[in-house]
Length: 54
Image (cartoon, rainbow, N blue to C red; front, side):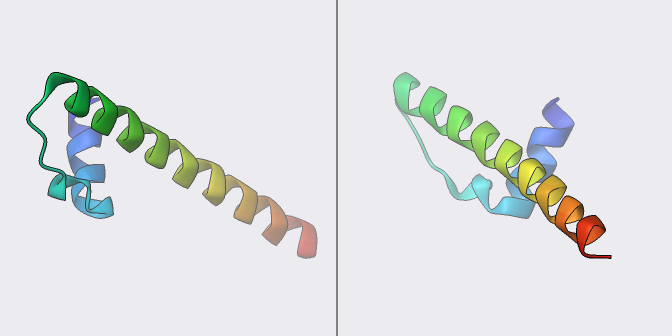
């Protein structure tokens, strides 16, 4: 999980987040995971539309 998270941080620009408070760090990590999941969902939906249009 750590490797995937670090790769996605680089790919999505999530490494630019600078946080100091414990709550802020937890929120940033949660938002990062949400963004990664939304990218996966977007990819699946686009694949589905591509298949249906053929």
